[in-house]
Each structure stands twice: as structure tokens, then as C-alpha cells.
Image (cartoon, rainbow, N blue to C red; front, side, top):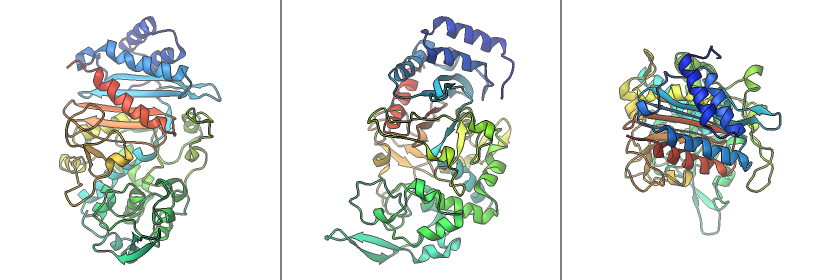
Length: 436
């Protein structure tokens, strides 16, 4: 991944060293520019950014690192297909004294879902996975699932599905499938479901799917956006159709064509040495914290949360989507399917609870694996209608704004509540740095 530093990059690094405050975080931000870049570079001003305002990102993360709220971060920003900001701050592994670098690898958690959506839609393009096909066409046990209805005594009764779970429901989280462990404990139905971490170790993908098909759905299919294990089931469907592991299919369809060399479900020893790790204790409450998937690989390639990747790789992925499915002459999806994926799929008959998952995202709907902004207002962050995005529970984030021709990916190792704070702050800082 390392290359000889070009003159323009060297000049940028020297300028950065002169102007940055002499903190370790700022110096690492400068040093990281020696690494290979994921996209062609452009000066911030040429791309409609203010260099002075972009420096606020440096200041923000230097302060967070100084306060020991986060070990470090990587932020990557592209506009108009050009890389305008790509810096690393702080430490990838504070315990080992490993500095953060722009090629640091992060556990992507739910940012896996977006890539799995692209891999699944590639099958839809081929006529192999219609969105209106029934989930039971692939795993018959899902036809027998019943829906739990809470009762006044704190228990629940069961009723039949009024309509079948469709593949479309898996993409948009309207299947009635949920995550256990996310609610306040008031739902006796959700209490029966495994958490995402538990689900990742329930055997192979088909075994996982068969096991959860025995549980009651929390809502009637097609009626409520309920964030959950739907994508893990979708990944099992992809594996059944292709006869390959999900990682094998995504490598063939997406990762290899886009030269995303540090993205995958399984890490080599060399890659594992570059993975960002959180502080051993949560800085907000002092409780132990960890990212379990780093040291305990899941039992299957779960589409919902199990991939790893660098922010440079993710920026290339996002640029491909912004380009309408192509990057550097390689076509991954057709423009029509990228448009379908990034449009709102929560119609008037679906209860939209996106903001229940992402607190600053009032005014967003949900497409096929991505949240989709529907209007300029309501949300607590700037942006434009058509912006699409999703984040990861371990501290990563991604958004793409077609109107601004903007792609942003950032990584931290912050699996606690601070991850939500960084999601909002990074979006504010990026839009605040635009000059036109």
C-alpha cells in the first residue's frame, strides 16, 4: 500500500507540519499523507473547501484525544471525485503505542450492510434475486413464523403473518425481524431475540437463519422500520443463491474490482496488526469495552456487521456509488440500481423509526441498506435531500451527498455512546468547511 511520496504530497506534508499545532495528533495527520491515496488529489480550495475550516477537524480530534475520550481517528473526504482531506490522528492501539495511520483497518459493524446491499443488488440485476420474491422461497421455515402481539399482562399472543416477508423487506428493515438487547426491556417479544453479537456466532449462515425462523416476529412484515438482523438473513440468502461465502461473493463483485485491498470478513495476521482498538474502558462511564469481532471471528460472514475495512477503501466504495455504480472504468451496479438503492423505500404504510436508531436523523427515510435524507430541515445536521448514509456501532461513519458531489468516511474505535457524538460532529465539521 505504500508508495514513494510525490512532490505535491510532500509539499502538503511540509505545509501541514509548519501550520499544525505541535500535538501528536496533528503530526500524525501530516505523516499519514505519505501513504498511497485512494482517489486523485485536489487542493481543498480547488474543490470548494476552505483549508482553514478543514483544519477545525484537526483541532477537534486533537482535543478529543488530549481529553482521552477516543484513541484516534481517520477522516477521508472527497469532492467531485477528488481527495481533498485524508488524515489520521492519535493512536490505533493506545495499549501497544501503535499510531493511527490512514491505512488503519476498522471493524465496520453496520457499515457492512451497505456493501452487502450492493452485493445482493448485483444478483437482482442478473434476475437471480427479485425484490418481491418471498424469503420463504429460499428458507421455507420463514413461512411459518408468527407475529408476536403484546398483551396487557406484559406477555404476548401470536398471530399469523398477514403478508409474507419479502426480500424487499430485508433490504429496508421492514421484515419484523429485530435485534435483541437493543430495547429498554419492555418488549417481551424482542427479549427472545439474539443480539447482533450473539447472532454472529450461531453456526453457519443457514443454521443462523433456521434458528431465528423459530422466533416470533416483532411486527407484521412490511409495516414498521425495525432495525435488526434482516441483513444477516439477506446475506444467508445471497450465499444460498451463489453457492459461495458472502465474502467470496463480495470479493468477486465489489472488493476486488474496486481494489479495496483491506476490506473483508477475515483478516491476515498483517492486517490484524493494523486494526484500530478502543480504550479498555469507556471514557464516559469507566466500564470495560471491547470490539469482540477483532479477536473472535464470527462463525459466518454476517452481512449485518462483520466486515473490516480501511477508510480509504470505503471512500472508493462511496465514490463508486456517487458515480452511479462505476469507478475508474469498472461498473459494479447500473445507475438505475444505484438510484433505486438510494431512494426512500418507506412509504406511507410503513412506520418510519430511522431516528430511533440515529438520533440526529429526523427527516430521513430508508432505502436499500442506506438512510436517505428527505428534506433539508428536521435533522440536526446540515445536508441536502438525496444524501445517503449509514454508520457503524464501533465508531465508523459514512455519508454521501450527490448534490454537493461529496463522499465522507471516518473511523474511530469508539463502541460506546460517544460514537453518536462523533457521527454528528464530523458531519457538522465537513459541511462547515465548504466554501461553495
